[in-house]
Image (cartoon, rainbow, N blue to C red; front, side, top):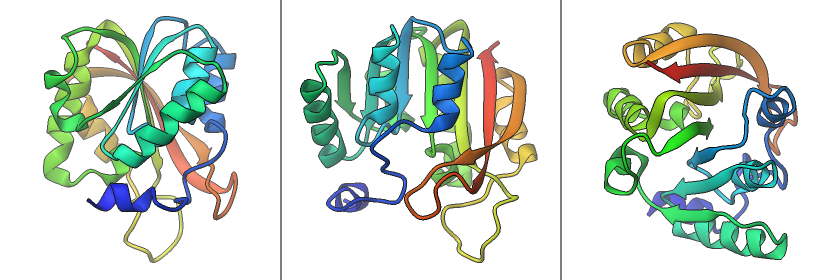
Length: 195
């Protein structure tokens, strides 16, 4: 499986620390303690940060290797949280409706195919409680480069995917930290609530 193979090495997004954009959300109080889910959690840095800041946190990823590493990391750091191997397009099989107060997404939405996006939005909507918050970090169309991947996403694409089911609070310019060029990749941060 592709994602499992990716985690045999160190993919460029696999920082040994949380994404600064999510650290800022905790520091500003936009993410408060509650039930939190990190979708596409990889090796778990953002999920561990949520747990260390008072959240009852869960991380989900398709890559078994990543989840195995995340569990080890949490044990080593004495942090209690859950990690689940699963497909975010089928979260209704794993979680109950309205189970989470907060869902975060660090670089998952921008790998979705066009036809997966509405399914993805519905799944996130379903597992969030009414008024629950969704924070999404993705590469923006302002990021230069001729590479196909990761896909660059426009504000209009974010709006058209999420506005039917969510109230969009803001879409702002931030940096996406990666091992390739730290703190310089152009990204969007979406803040939205389940409507």
